[in-house]
Image (cartoon, rainbow, N blue to C red):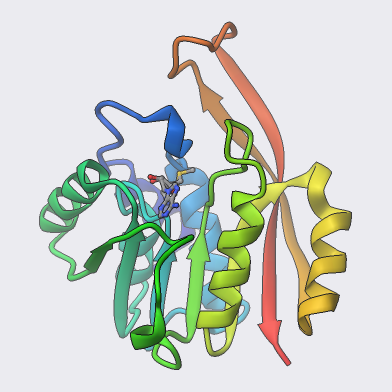
Length: 207
Ligand SMILES: C[S@@+](CC[C@H](N)C(=O)[O-])C[C@H]1O[C@@H](n2cnc3c(N)ncnc32)[C@H](O)[C@@H]1O
């Protein structure tokens, strides 16, 4: 499968119908989702035949892309049952099998997934709306749960901090790509039509 083909397929993925700001629900665009998963697969061999978890799976676009690229198993985790419902509808439409777990990843005990997920991918809340630090809590949980690697999107402005944390946690850290995350006017407090945020696509590996 070519990158452009994957991006084009993902255009049909439905997004949040009533996005919830308290959970920082911003969908990853098909353009970014395709690049993230395609790179994880073709450069690092972390998707095809791997068990892939998606932390904060939202409407499922990252899990669906993993599945299309041949993931052996996919499971998405999200706090919001409405998002999971949309993700399940998307999976039906794409005819892909993904399990979903409705849970608060900050509180959840993920023991039953320990040692079972090779790769975890995520576009976490950035911790900007009353959720300060949630990005790092989710990242640490993903690193503790995955057996091999974790891919995550973070604001570029937090790069130094995350690099230090990765050292502290004993995992390798790599900036795979610098990307622009397009935030459309979705919420009442948004004043501009579109805002682009500089984000790093990061890869962590257990060493
Ligand atoms: C930026 S959105 C990304 C959604 C989706 N992965 C995507 O790429 O389009 C973040 C997601 O994290 C979920 N989320 C926020 N807080 C969470 C928590 N404590 N536990 C689990 N999921 C959470 C939100 O509901 C939302 O779906």
